[in-house]
Length: 289
Image 1 (cartoon, rainbow, N blue to C red):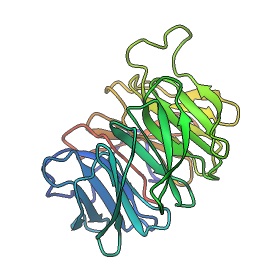
Image 2: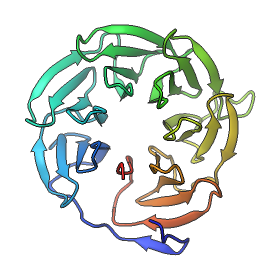
Image 3: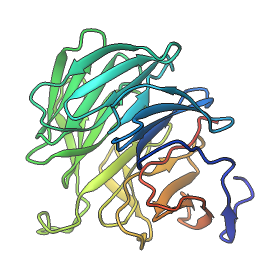
């Protein structure tokens, strides 16, 4: 993407076929060779795609709301309404399921950087930290009255960001206590419509936290202070359900309807547009390279 400019329109390398419903989540393996895709499933559900040719190599099971590779690439994890499923990437076999207690509907989960735990959030007012090996909850993080639509660990694993209904909270992972609250709305407008945040992520060195959601605005925060560094130009295409930061932390990718915009982080300039989808884009990610 080094030659992008604001007139660039990039066509897809390949189009994966064989899905009977919309894609709700996707993740790329640590080496960039495979993609796991979750469909909003009334047909094919959780599938692994070869990133080189777009062909489906494995079909796993009915766990499609959120998906992830473990940091070491050995496990694939997916979620349905109240259960986490864990598969071996090598064999495609289901290793175990973890029933998340006291959570009526899982919406999001994320691995700790060491791959030993996952934080799980949804339509409850707490986030649970689950031990992958035992399936036991070891800690809860209070969301302060809202639900959880987005989660992200800092690269060093010391901080967890989450929430989005509407506040974003930053917690100390060791103590489980909140450090600070990020507000995307003006004072006195907490309960107004279109305030929810649907996606958050840290850049690779943890110096910035990005968020986006129902108001169509991508925001860049300083997680160490809670200061809003930048609010990018509003995307006039509806809600933003997913954003991605490239490995060099110089580019942002954000959906705009059926297209994907590539944005320069420093300047906010839209460098190009990725085309090829014919429906709303809900999930995006950069490959590790």
